[in-house]
Length: 484
Image 1 (spheres, rainbow, N blue to C red):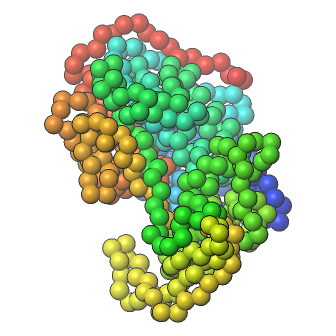
Image 2 (tube, rainbow, N blue to C red):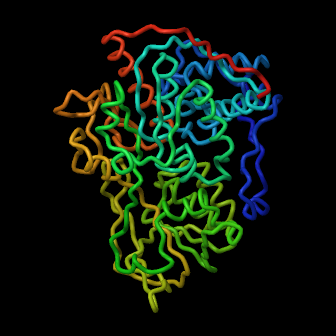
């Protein structure tokens, strides 16, 4: 008899966790993982695989977990996914593999907790020092990858397995892209990102830090030095509301606010050089995961936090678990409220003026009811205002190279099937991740979507390089000792 409800992952008590940046979810024990895995129906037609952007063989890895064969489960996972500790934590499984799970279609039943099991297996392997080994036959070809976020590291892993010499170029001093500068420690510990990406270095991938392509190194240089290029620079240009007062002291974009905490230790000032003073009251505007992250980080700095959203909670694009955690921790949701002016004194933020909204009967393209103003306005005092309404592509690289075309939204234009960039030149360049938006199968904006882009691009790069003839040099066997 399959149990209807999933095993709830233990987590820190809200009263304690808002005072620290330690991971909120504490992970399954081996017994809990095996019990949860036993809830799998073992479907003949595995809809969960179809729901996974990188097509992990979910039934097979779950079956191994069920039997306690955790190393076998890890080997199955890493055939498709080199970084299960990352994806197990931040993937929106409820809209992908778990959203396709047959168990979840039964009345009163939860879908299998696939993400929790994936995280458990990845953490177990790390604790035991188990790292997958690959036989790598050198191809004599080289590929440059711009950006070490989810798309970049996935492409790097797949291309290196095929024997290509891979160099990752990272603009910052640490690898990981949005995984390190955009996701708080309590959701994605930085040590996990470092350890997962260290797998690439063990495979022979070279990472060059503090290198901004288009500024410190030109795209033409990369083109001359490599046989192919993969562009995975993300979409790091913040969006603004376009309302009066956004220039005031005390107003942050979520990009800056989270980067100050995640990369610059602002929460530990004065031990670290970057100061941040959020005051006694913080307002955040937005309804996505970044808005939830910003609000929850602000809470941990000892302030009261209000989150403004122009629709109601059920229309928020954030993951349900992040909304739940934010409410559980004490973030106050100001639904049907839209900031229209930031009011200051002597250049500093003092108040936020907002309009009360209502939902009309008309729907937007995503099927959500469109909010309209009611002509009622109010204002409230705040010391800090954080704008978390999304990001746009950074135009630096496209402007610095003649090879890249962009659309009206600034995204690099690619072939929607192969992800090769649109260019009049014979440049063998591909792009993926947030820099291409949702051009591939209408999907984008999540870590696993970016990883799927990296996989597709790597596959097509390898196929094209193979046609040009490899210099099959020496055999390299990437064997890794355990307990490292």
